[in-house]
Amino acid sequence: MNLVRSSLFLSAAVLAAAVTIGAQGAPPQPAASMTTARTWTDADLDRIMKEVGATFGMLRKSIDGQNAELGKQQAEKLESLFEEVDDFWNARNVDDAADWGDDAAEHADHIEDAIDDKDFTKAAEHAKLLQGACATCHGKYRDKGPDGQYRIKP
Image: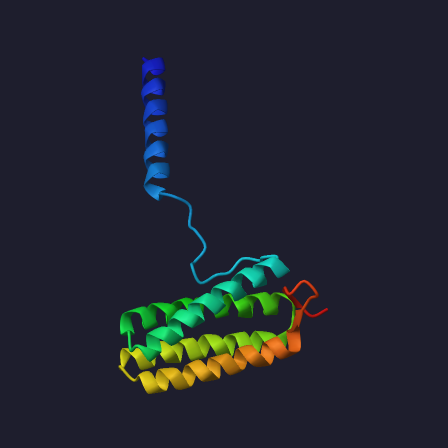
């Protein structure tokens, strides 16, 4: 009889443990806002800059044509891309370039807000300010090689 009781007790304990573990669900994941350490390469910045160029061109056309839906999408994409630019330069401890990337992201956000308000004149003004942040950083940190490709100045 003790053997039966021990077996029942052991079975109940295993079942209780399995239910407890199953009820806990998956282990917690880091919050989306948390960033993990990343090693950024020059190729990463090159990829981002190529996306910025194409996206900014579409944004300008959207503003000029007063296409709110497309303009808003492009402004959101630019904001995200410039946040990556900010992360790239922060990882390299280049504060002024990181600040310009942050400024560009803020201008993209202002463009989006202006487009939401159907104020395409204000959106165009912020697009010029965004271009200014780009030009400042390019002037200091971008170099055109003999092959015509742009690189980060050494």
